[in-house]
Image 1 (cartoon, rainbow, N blue to C red):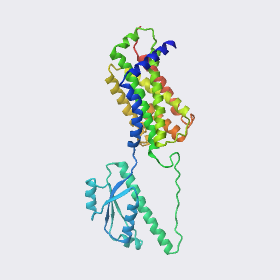
Image 2 (cartoon, rainbow, N blue to C red):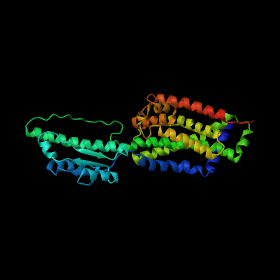
Image 3 (cartoon, one colour):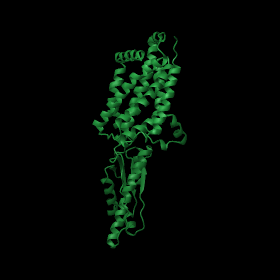
Image 4 (cartoon, one colour):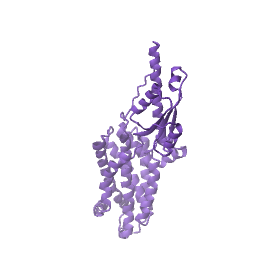
Length: 371
């Protein structure tokens, strides 16, 4: 343990002397939390819509007023034909178009049923789907109001179904609550994997690794000495990021913080070991950095951080079994937003322990030491 202590002392001194590492350690958490949580969102705040009113009747005007009264839609244009509305969509001046046909009011009065047309710019499939659904809901509400009025006039009791939704764990549907735990996962993954990989390979470039190799230091002591300082730094960054998330976004932290930091420690051992393993097979910091970014981009996009894993193809879902980010994203959201305990995330915990043990062993075995 005395040897390990001296290695740790040397590593901390080396880290704080390296001026290129300090901004990554201290500035990156603040930049990531304050920018990415706002920027990484699929929320639809406003859609531009054009309305073609071919009827100019009280019913068509009432429907248009209901669309204009919805804060999601901003009515920009009133073209005179569906063709003009299509041109506006082609020119990306509007996202949707609502076409109200002739005799709209007359058909409603005669109970014949009236059709309206919705044209949607579907280049962004998610926005197109949501915009179309919201506009359909407005039209459905409009039709429901007409049926209620007719029932009142005919003195019949209208048949209605009242739906009361209950949103658990994020009652206000705040997207920042959903993204902030995921951004924290990116944060400590970068700190762990990138800095871990750069540290050992830097020793190779400076030639100091040869001096260490001729000492009686054991391989596991050297790897552990490289890993533990960044484990502490990663936990510090996690605490800093959580504090920012609480103060800036008022994110609720429902679970146990000791449990969260315990699970984060295991995850950091895994990503740090992966970074050290990459550094053992790299000769320069550039090679290590490119290798880390390659794996990080693949793991990140498949982790479920931005898109649900359930919507991916079956082969991608199965490939996620070897993706550590997939497990830790579920742990972070579960513990922070749902207040999950160890029993609730035991499957993810067990997977991280197994992968961390394997990766730590691989890093030790791959490190070539001549004594």
